[in-house]
Structures are given as structure tokens and as C-alpha cells.
Image (tube, rainbow, N blue to C red; front, top):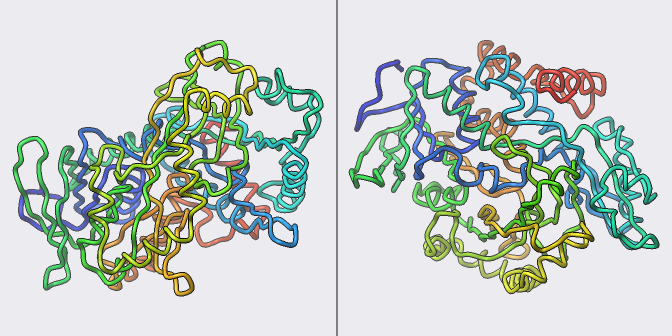
Length: 499
């Protein structure tokens, strides 16, 4: 390993495919753990974080399970399952620890450039939904992550929390909401750009924009041969890498398939596109200060849970509603219409067909969404903002997500609505597939990846010490240790300007 400039047709320690939040997080972590690593980052677009990590292309919610009802399903016996919510809440606390470290180390100039405090709320109406939300709050407050969650069915209280949502609403309508004051809005695009900018300044790191990775093949010595094209000049380049991470959003699956590793067999992808209604009226934007999540329609993917969402985008307060789901055969927002068809292989066609067979409700939902008129979209918005006017909103494209399809013994194939790290047996290549909660849990995802792929180094005293510098709670359980969790949340809130 050396700190020399990285030339063509050479061997580097690390290749990161895609310049999004996942690659940026992994690159910073590895460079902290071992400063002499050589790293090349390849991004097919002309800017960093322009796909799934961009502010307009993801929810921007610091996913901590405060308001996302799909993380707390109601079981057949009527009880609320909170295990996934607790896990996601812990993962987000770990992410905040790492981000606090980044602030302290100067990787990010100021916390307000990417994170700010915005209350997280769930809001529902109708007897069954109100009963569900009440039981959910009663289950969650028993755990220390959620002990400050407030609940109300009182219109007057709800008006104080979310005036736009309550104004013009039928006073007799049965509604309820939960309120978490410590929720956050995160601009993952801004965070990613800060991290990549700092990474570029370190010796042995090179970023190549407008460069597409065309192929990944294993060499005889178990390094990887990477073929790259310059999208501007058409020039081709080859290099070898000791370790490859494919964090290319929806583009990760085709590259994983090209690697030929046995672990990639049977995986497929189901693309879901999205659109936002974006408010253009400053007076309306100024009067809403919360992320308000509702219940998803039957059959809809988690990324389509409706929310009236206060956001900070490029330093400007914004208000978005949606996303409205759609279908496209592209795997990336700026991808090819042939992406889905090219991903169909002999080893994944049965899982793909099985998912089509078992998810007719999702298919019907997406067809309805695609056929929506402007009046239909306004009607959906008015369920959350009764006095919304069509002239105050414009339609804009949201991100493209590729949900995971994988083999399943019982049903041949199953559609997964999460994230999954796929790693070769020898740990020399790894890829991230899937979507939500994605970016919010990028830090624990990358810790897991490093523990799988760098087994010889992860338990050395040097790496253990450095992990504890980056994440002080490393090796301990925030789920089981309330005092540690409270102290951690208090410290990170202070550093990140959330207190």
C-alpha cells in the first residue's frame, strides 16, 4: 500500500462504485481505520450524490421509526410488533454518533448544512386506524428510544402541532396523531458531497465523475479486474482492486450479476419510481413544521407511504407531499429503459415470476398510481391538508428505487422492502441492494460490511480503538442500556445542533 498517485491499469486497495452516501460513508470509515489505503471512486454522472442520495430523490427523514407506520405492523392477535422499529431507531442513533465524529473531525463544516431538528408525526383517521395508532404509541413508549412520544386524539392539540393538517377538517372526524419532538430532517446529498470533497483531499484517493463501470471480473489471484468507460471521451480503462464495493443504487444489481459470485444468483430487482407535489407558496411552507406520515395504501411499497414533509433543500425550507408511486423499467432515475430486461437471468427468472404471481395488489396499486390525474393527486393531498389549492403545488420527479427480489423456498421468490448487503465468501466484493431505510442507516450497514469483508483487521486493537473513536457506543447495546442510550442521544444532539 502506498500514497502515490493512482495511475491507469494498476492495482488499488479499494474501488467504490457510485458516489452516494454509502460509498462516501465506507470510504471515510476505511480511510480513518487505515490511512494508507488507496481508493478509487467511480460515478457515472457528472456530479456526486445525484441519484438516490440527492435531497429530492429520497424522503430526507432521519428514519428512526418515530413516524413510519410500516415498521410497526399489527399482528393477527391485535398486538403491535415493535422489534423492527427498535432496531431502526438504534441504527439511526449510531449514524448520529458517526456524523458527530465527522463534525468534530472537520469532515463537515457545520451540522446545519445537512441535519436539522423537525418533529416526526404519525397521523391517521377512522376508528380502526385511530385504535391502531393508540396501541402503537402504548407499545413504543415502553422502550426508552420512544419514551417521549406523545399521543392525542384532541383536535385542539393536533392544531397546535400541525395547523395545516387540521384547518378545514370536519370537527367530527375521528383522528389521532403521535408527536416526537426530536425528529430530524437530513439532506443526504449535502452530507455526501461534504464527505467526498474531504476524501478527495486525502492522499491516495481519486474521484472520477462521468465514468461508468462496465464490467467486474475476478482475477486468478482473487483481486478484481474493473473495466471503466469515460462517458465524455469514450476512453476505456482497466484497473485491479483488492476490494470492491458496489454502492450504485439501482445500478448495483447488474454489476453484482457481472461479478459472477455465487451469492449474486437468484437476486432480481423490481423498480418503483416516484413523484412529489412541491409547494410553491412561501406562506404555506412557513406554516408547516413537521414530517407527517400516514398509513400506506394496501399493496403499496414502503417508499410510497404518504407524508406531508418539511424539508431543507439547498438551504431553503421546502414542503413536499407524496411520493406518488409509479413504474419504470429504469433502475436509476437517469438509467436505461432496458435496465429491468437486462437484469433477467436464468437463475432469477423463477423468483421474478413468483413475485409477479404473489403481488397482484402491488401491481394494481402501481397501475392506479400511474393513471392518476392532477385532480386525483390533489384529492390525496387534501386528505392531509384539507385546504390545499392546486395552484400552490407543482409536480416533480422523486427518486427511482429497486426493491429486492430473492429466492424463497416456500414461494420460489419473495419481494423485500429493505436493504441487503450481498458479500462474496472471501469478502473481496460486496454490494448493497434495496431501498428504505437506506441512507439513514448507512453507518451501521457499513460497519456490518467492514466486519464481513475485513475479518483479519476488524478485531485488531488498532481498528477496535478507531471504531470506538468514530462511534463511542461501538460494541455496546443502545437497545438494552437506557443510560448509555440517553447519554449518547444527549451528546449527539448537542454536537449536531439538535438540542
